[in-house]
Length: 372
Image 1 (cartoon, rainbow, N blue to C red):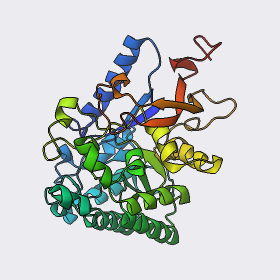
Image 2: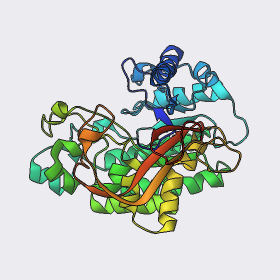
Image 3: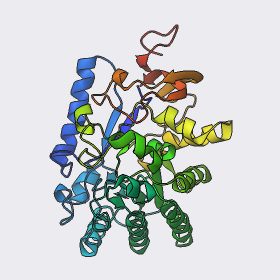
């Protein structure tokens, strides 16, 4: 219902996706679901952990996982805090695939760049709003310093690095300068990043009235940070839009800002929410669409037909009405998460149908039945 034909799943599962067995289990579950549904479902591309059990102590078996087709490795939700362990991760990663020719679709290390030591138990952005609410905040420096570290390590080891869910103005500037440094070192395309639709939409001011519905990790920042994210996306510093989809029940999110889990559901509203956040105009819309389609498909090395619309390619696409206005009703979400900070918000533009592998997978397409 979100228009996706392929999704990359994160390894913060139980058990963590840190081995070939767990990776293959995810792929098998998707095949079983598709057989039960009797129609095509989005492709699942599991990202695997950088360290065993995402514990930040011992690298995974990169060689085995790369051979099996994994293209993204991350301890998503956690950074690899120990410099010596991160060096070991990068050396093991180099050994797994070898230093071959430049290729932006080669496997990457993806960083949830945030220093836990600097989070100080925070539940939202550290600023005037957190002070007003009397809750501990997460300073932007916890992200800025971790992003700088990840960029520096990638440059030193000549490895492809992806920074996920960027939130601060400082991080955007570090990535912009980092891309220049990578290009100067002959590593153009080795540094990439993404932003989420909710960080493009909301700020810490919204936490005051949305409460735990707007509690995410990393947190919603200030308006000037959000403006920098929008500018970074439109200017090309930020390459992709990701959902960081983190579903939770209404009961979990009703526990209050201090006790509720971090996370916002994003799959079913990402396209419309991102377009509405960035604003009108064909040029801006084209950039958003690229950040949700061709950009990420190139990043993960998907087949050439993924993320493009061209003659003689397999039809994987969504039909989108840019003019239709609709009210977000989480109770109507297909997923198990029925709460969202977007609840009640009016969005312009709505997905009408999804075609996967040439067949209608969801929605209505007048005049089309079965194969398209």
